[in-house]
Length: 126
Ligand SMILES: [Zn+2]
Image (cartoon, rainbow, N blue to C red; front, side, top):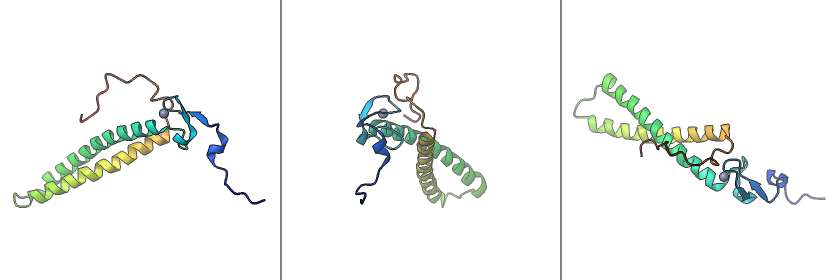
């Protein structure tokens, strides 16, 4: 009686599952473990990347302040510090994006994409 296929979380669900984010029925292959559909994951990623850039800019601002006030670069090496700053913003945005996405996944807010688009909310940095 060898078990040829291991039971997975998908076995507990019917073929069509309602996505918890947009409340639209989806094929279960489109959903992941948290019952987010492909579209909702993409939306969350997209949103997280905006927050990521914001976080990166913030981090870059602090870094710039630190370089400006503590290190006090001379004109000679300012180019190198600007490169450092750019790298800092880039890395900071990536870290912040993953963090924001992780928080979104962790909080797993229900039906958040089912609401009509918010017309007042503008993307930061757009
Ligand atoms: Zn969805």
